[in-house]
Image (cartoon, rainbow, N blue to C red; front, top):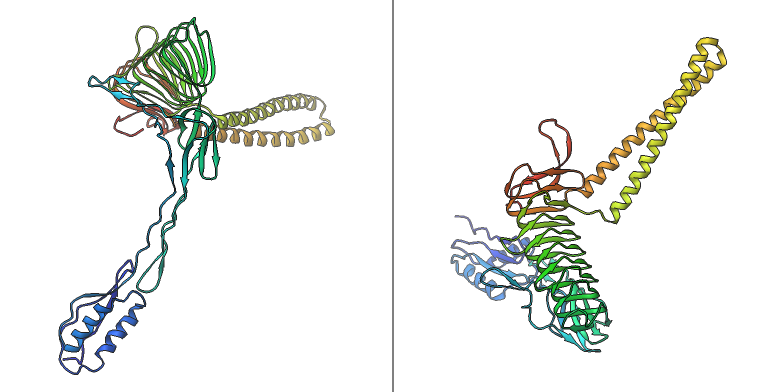
Length: 476
């Protein structure tokens, strides 16, 4: 039997524990057994977090010659996480809510709770700074840094000012979060109706109409809430529009999101999303965001729709001689820049083509003269012009290549961003147009998604853009 068994100390993978491995009993002299344990801890590099009681127990068992079970003899300390900064709201804040749905699936946009009214000088919110964490350490004295904390972000919008880390209302009005992380206060104008009694309405804040905007009347406001919008009304708002009932035959522009129950025979533009409970019929609509039919049976009939991000509906119908049309994607400012670049390249190429044609015509004339005269100086001029012609052709080839690359780069960037999602079916005749491709359905198609994709044609082997019909289970 050996004089003494090996004593080993292992360090856990995360470095937070040192463990004396199991030691069998052994007989013989007890001299130096304590130093064996000390040497094992030193070899393992244990310098911090020793559990003195555990070490004493191991030492006692070694001195008694008794078996030593696996024992944790040192513990590190994990880092204590900090806390990210947060926003403490000092008043109730209406989150952007769509409304409540009843048992029949109908959505009541009016059921949103009380609107948050604030007073001039009232504190609205406060930024709470992040609290940094505390570093930890391993049993070998390696420092473990905690994750970095992040500050909360909140900005002051209309009639809100920031004073240090506190946001204060500059006037009495309605507190809204027009976009995530931006507080604004809007004045409120309450009206029974917009009609002959009020005339046209122009107001910088929120216009709340208990009834509706009558036919032929105009509203220009910061935001609008109304029961309905009647035929030939003209509405222009900076932010959001919420209509409890229908939008019928209306010309409507909004900088933010529009919510309503029904849209019929209207022209709509909005900078956010268009959220419609039940149906859109015979309308022309352009949105920077998405159009969403909220009811599972929501439908779109004979409409011309352009979306920046996407379109989600239950059914997409095309009745009579006016099939529906969906355009996927919008060109932004960067698209305008690309168009300018493409126009410049195309213009340069066209000029080179014309210069090349004139030069070739001139050389042909000189060639005919040389055949008649055999003049040496004319032959030299033809040779020099031939070199210029060769250079011109090289430049034309180069700029043609650059133009094609620019067109492909523009296509890759512009197309394929927006999607179409149909939960139930779309009629034959529906036209789906992207930035570089289009598709007309020649038959009804059940639940599907569609997107403009750059792909290889399996028949020709050529790359190009196409409107792809996809599995509806594929996330947009």
